[in-house]
Length: 235
Image (cartoon, rainbow, N blue to C red; front, side, top):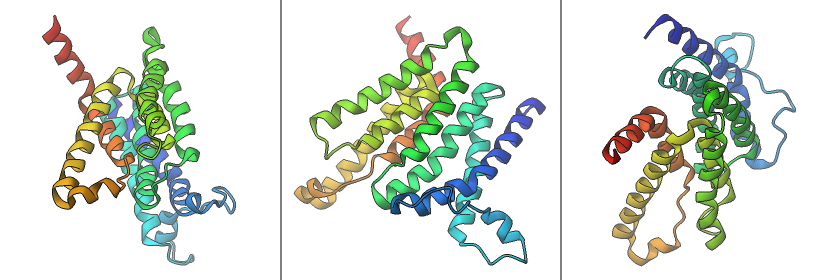
């Protein structure tokens, strides 16, 4: 890892750690309808290191550490520059999103929409010559998930649509393999449920957010290479 990329990664980790209290607050407060900023979230990491404060919950410490690590990983994979910002925002936002969706079958607008706006601005700044690609990818990805919601609202939530918007904003064209990976993984999981529970699997609900998050990881890490490979096959 070059020094330039190392610097971007370190800054992303610091930013992820700084936003960690807000992520932990989102996980604890948003599903209950409580305000995220009142009372002001305190750093669980700082509380764990301080002898003067009460011991914070281990879950809050884990969320803050995960946010810092995710932001650093996003920057490291995306590379230096504005692309690092988009990657860091995407992965850091996925930490509270996945936890909330797993626990409550909800995706928090309070996390997804601000992250989408920030990731979109960073992605457009990263490739000014193709500034239109991130917004087009964001709208396209959201549209792909909006269609199932229109047909069967109980099978796909609007939160998933908004999460696809975030992923498209951050990844640009790489959202295509990201969505393909998400749907493929969900199909495998669905087949496993049917094999185990038979017809009863139809009454089971599985959150789609974690599959979208996994697809986002695929798109961030390998999406551009996958698109280049596919384009080369068509040439």
